[in-house]
Length: 454
Ligand SMILES: [Ca+2]
Ligand SMILES: [Ca+2]
Ligand SMILES: [Ca+2]
Ligand SMILES: [Ca+2]
Image (cartoon, rainbow, N blue to C red; front, top):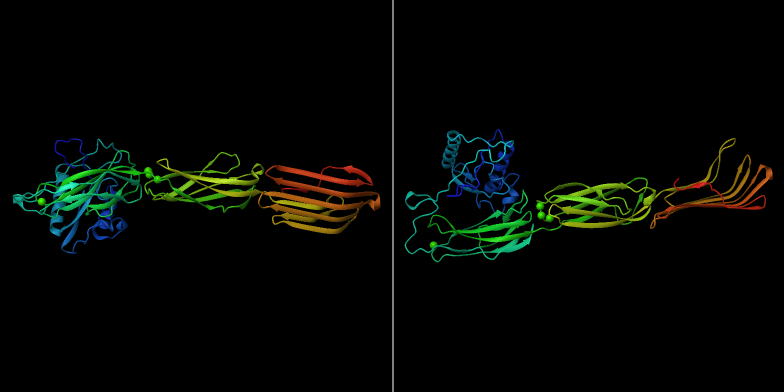
């Protein structure tokens, strides 16, 4: 807007419906929300829009800054105003604006050019004078007292929450029109916006979608002078760390270490303008995984996965940390148990003769199987028992096999007390086996015939 004597006052930039259809439509959507409580942006203006929409066929909704500017109603930093005006006034104003664009050759905004090269123009808003009609001001009656305006003390509070503003306006001879407005400081992020709960009341709250310094202005207009009387206060909006909840895995959930363990966490941030990153630590010494974030308006999900492998077996703690773009971070953890499946068998012969794996077990679930006697072409194997057990707390898989004995080749070879076990868990994979005797001679230990994993 034109500010006398200030060549750096920010100006407006022309857009057209043809060249900038998205910006143009956004301006219209915000205007419709504020004027008619319709369209995709209506919820933003339920408290702040026009108290009554324009009367159809008589009035139309006029807005400032113009819909044909980049700074129109949809602009995230600039505030805007709407008013019901007679249809003919709106048409006349629109015509004058187009004439100005053409006669002054105001070129439309070009996103490919730096801002300093794009055409800029200014609007001087003149308060109506006493003798020339209009609705705003008027001659100051003799003795009329100007409003006294105090925006109240500086305030602070977290992003996304209503921060109370206690302004006061007094005028002994009028009931001034009250308006709150705001300006975002340089320490705010692009896209931040604030809203007043009651922009026409002395006491209101301001709610912002991000943190930073906001200057609020309380204006009171008794319509008897060239402009409103104003006062400002500073609102310091602080950042709030996001809230994080791990949706998956569930606490204590079991995962096969040979397959990916997926993680999904939801998060919400009271700063709807904040963006987020997330990191997932899987608790097995591997470097944290950068999670995939999907979010909108400060709410989203973080997903990632990791395959633990044999070095990652046992109880593990998965930790998800979500960090907003202002450094606010929150972590949540969930315990899980990583295992590998096991399997075991008591006898298995292949070659000239074939004996299937018998008995043969797999776990989880834990299982025990026995066979009293297994007769083969080469002899008899007695009392085979195989058990496979998964400790769901420790993620430890254990397979035990015992064979009472075998009488082979018509009794020429007699083997007794064959035992074998194998355990896979957080301490690694350990195997042990024992053979009692062969033909009555004690043997000791050797390699067994079972496996974890199966
Ligand atoms: Ca007054
Ligand atoms: Ca923030
Ligand atoms: Ca935040
Ligand atoms: Ca931010």
